[in-house]
Length: 215
Image (cartoon, rainbow, N blue to C red; front, side, top):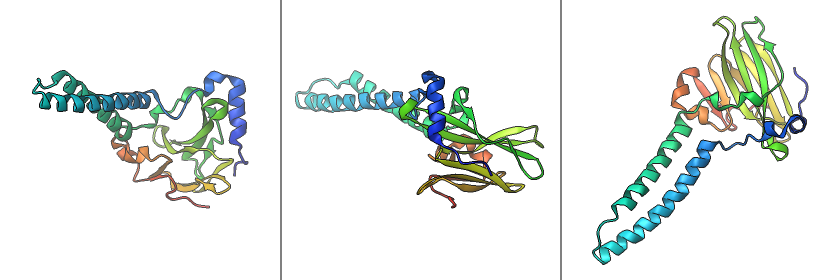
């Protein structure tokens, strides 16, 4: 079993290394753009509603341009929402700034290798995510991510058999630990991987949040 791990230490190293490495936040640019467009669309909708009411009362022409702008904004928000929720992949992980964690950890027959990586975010006031990458050496060293969550003070992992990896990620009463069948199961804390249409062929069972947690 790997030794206990402190997320505070990794984040401190990240800050000392370079503030630039820690400026990655949880909310990406596309999400921020969606929020901005949604805000503008709501304002346009209110203006359109008032303008439409006035045009009906005073029998003025229908505000076509304002209507088109409002519908376009709302349509863009819907597209961004669908893309963010149903076209999610782990490619969004900023691997340039990751730091190596426990591993490589070979399975009993050495067919698989598990390796954890840390992903600092938010600078000194931020935190650290952890993701576990699995390599299948009998399948052209194919790699896939089987675990992604906010890392806690105690993080370790070990194989219980050839196909089963226990990942311990716990701090006091916040437990994100889980046992995974690496051939069929994955864990994603936010659950976006579980909803993603493009990732359906990568697992049989996808856990999110506290689903499947073990002590």
